[in-house]
Length: 79
Image (cartoon, rainbow, N blue to C red; front, top):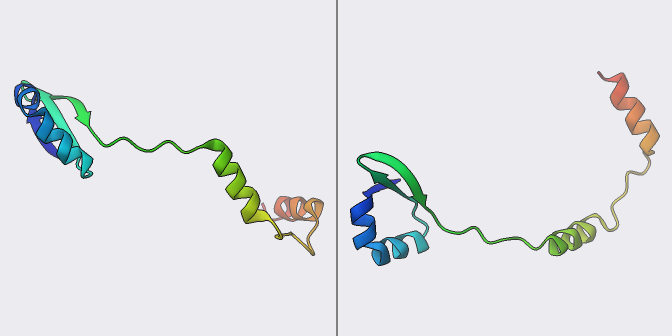
């Protein structure tokens, strides 16, 4: 991870943002002490989309021939 002083970060912000847009993380220091990290934004995941994907994934999948009660009992016995 690259380190940049606060003054340099202020004067070269556009350049640093381009580097971050390419995936680089940059530590900003003040008097040699890290005070911030300039990092790419992680895209937010839509919870409704995740639920829909989970439902689609489990469609058609079953525990047969296992029953839930049997699986719980088996887990308890194995401890």
